[in-house]
Image (cartoon, rainbow, N blue to C red):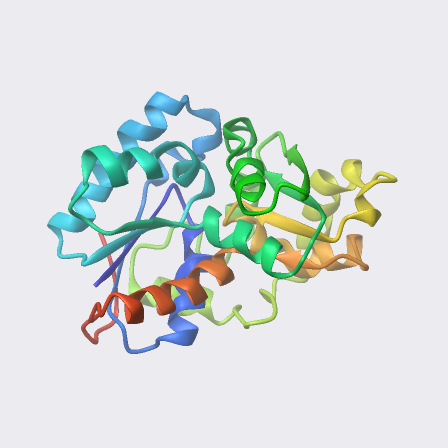
Length: 258
């Protein structure tokens, strides 16, 4: 099984992208709703929670675990890979998003993310390694955006395959079909203050939190001339390549929640 971890329902954007590409794989999802959102936790707390739940996913039978949370990826991925689970396969969603920037030859990029992800400098540092000429502007979105997004979802807490199927009806490879007035109002509330003179000159905008893709359709109206990069989509594409390269077989099955 492919184990997926997030602090809430943001990781379901990655699960949906995987389910679209590989509908017959078996998936195991865990959301730490109790401590959501992670952006208001310390790096030490983020590491503690992430390590515990990644262990739970492996104990439950996961072959590989994906940190489908940018904040958790930013603060724990390297530690998990090199110190805690060196013999396990653990990936995150931030690196594929950064790699897409270089692939598209973007020279000036805006990253919208949580405060903790911005403070980690994960996107900026990764893009500097891949292409030192890329200019990165990281913007932390304050307030309760993550909670507000989850409050608008048809399923606030996804605990079963039936819950996920309800949410999956809103998914398409191009954007999440969350497009009523409530979603547009939410996008304007948090993103409009950042419509400044330099944003229109960005080559791309990275949605640096797996919750933000739910807002993509509304954001395309706010930033009509921008290319959006969704790390959930990029991570799903790269994971398929990774599994093939490393000859990892994933059993067929459904979507399970713990």
